Image (cartoon, rainbow, N blue to C red; front, side, top):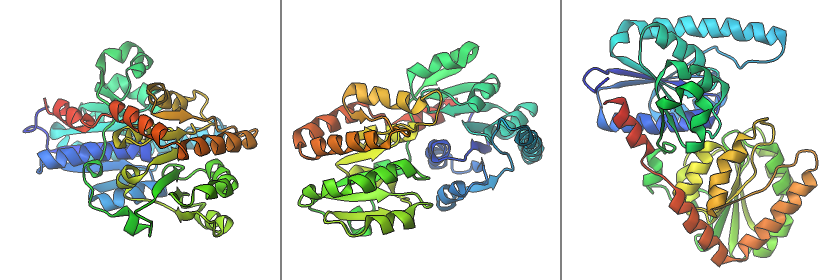
Length: 371
């Protein structure tokens, strides 16, 4: 479809920031180039979706779809909500089907939306930024005209649909290319000190929060030159703030950050998960990273997301050992002590990360959508 034919674009995906942020980056680029195009997000009913999409200025509609579970009762609920979402989306898409396209980004809301679009012969595209695609994207690949991915290693996972795959990188929000906010002022930080940023992604991470609270006293030796910004997640914020007390090192606990790109670019070191968007943001910002991949994924896809950055020298991977958390704490403490006392090593890691960063993925995707 070309720009004259396309008047409406729906993005389908949600439940995590990883499904929403790439879509927002593409939506921003579309709005910038094609101002008359109407854009709507079909998302989940989870709180994080409204938190992310609310300030964006784009319309969004939560769907009743839920994730698939092994429980027979929950499986029945999954099917019922899938069908409910399918028919709901179909009625929304039908009136302008001939001038509409749908872009799926993964997650349980993507499936019914893509299926509804396909039934109306609406072109479907997929954005998959994880190294290993999720079940929804693998299933929806049969409907897709093109599948945009971040890593070449992702291509084989789409099997007989791999010829539809295009490696473009991860779309990044326009915030990565602007520096309007003074993060030091926002969080009452010292502009003369380096920032150690600790994040458990948009929903926070209990295991990372626990590890940080344990090792925080060991970071006090760096109080002269460093300060800590700890993104706890909304659910853990009050508990972390209470447990942290008043450490000697300048420490700020934050529940959620709307200006993550600016905060990353101001940081000298980041500790966080290895979601596909996070890895792309670390590289684009040129910030050295200590990655603790999410430990509950059987396919270990966050580990595989982080591996290219680690292989390039821009990151260090530490296993988040949920069975023996003391191992994680010890490894994290030793790694941070080493990096925070070695400016030269941080500079080398930053340069390596920057070389791997790609900043034109959103532009490439928009160009291909409107060819």
